[in-house]
Image 1: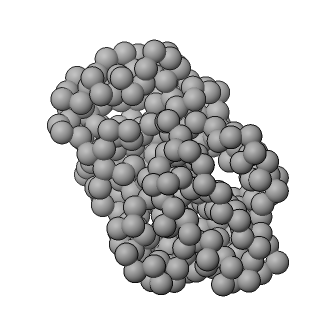
Image 2: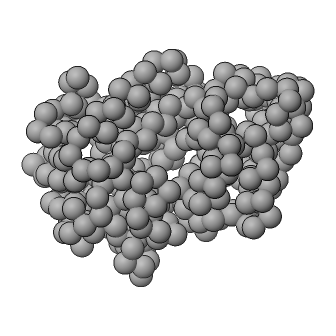
Image 3: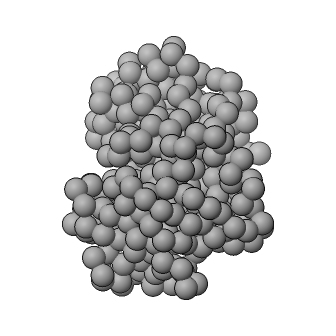
Length: 317
């Protein structure tokens, strides 16, 4: 590991992506698996003249789990927060409440040192931001979505829901998203999703799939799964019925992202679609499941109100 180079990357991210100013305070939250990256962010913040704080917590057990109370208090009091952790805090009330208080937040769930130097971190974020905002506007306007893949079809109602841009650029108060990033996403109407779909990229909590997963949905919930990794998925979701809720429809917009088995990168791949199960109450939905896991679909077709906007990895708008 070239720590000096890592600090240089961190300075660029804090300056270009987060717009960190000298008079602001920076909070970095990590666990033992991500401490090197966190340390580089902390040192970069100090070099930029900011009041910086580094907090290491115990790794959370699952994506979407809330952090400890003391960490939540620190988040409320911070201007800029960067969260390189092994599990995701992206869809937590801690993050949502800190944003309401005015913090700018970048979550980096599952970030690796390879990803810190390569892949989506190297993207042209002006292009990512432009495409992400355009797709978000299309999601805003749509009443229904349909995903098609290998003869399967999944329909989701989007009526009354707002799209969310995760551009990787968070320079204004209350803005947040993943870093590296590049996706437009939305919470489908609960109870509306039906049909079947193939997940053939990766799944959060599982990694790169050994073979395609075929998922079956009724009344907005997962009712069956077939494929080599189906048992792993059901064990991941556990006994909580809310974990089977279709929580999210997302579209990747980063042309530097690769399939790595880390959902932070995989769901950002340009031309992919992902769906998530579990919680969506932090971005426009109503379900709080205590878990949020995404599955990536490679080369799908995506229709919004009957119009094809994505076909086998190529945009059609």
